[in-house]
Amino acid sequence: MWTVIYIAPTAKIADMIQLRLTEEGFLIQVRPVHLSKQQFEILVPSGEVEEVQEVLNSILHA
Image (tube, rainbow, N blue to C red; front, side, top):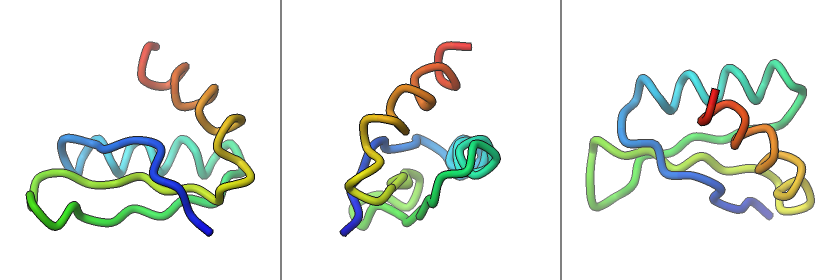
């Protein structure tokens, strides 16, 4: 099961987050938000949410 951990405002940001989290060894899925073509959901396996959230916070606040 996959859990949304972040909604990226642009494809460029979604790609950057996906690259950085993949480099950290996490499985990541990115999919467009249906209501807006400009936003993208970042999804991770449900069991990794807490660990990924910590890394994501460091990426977003770097």
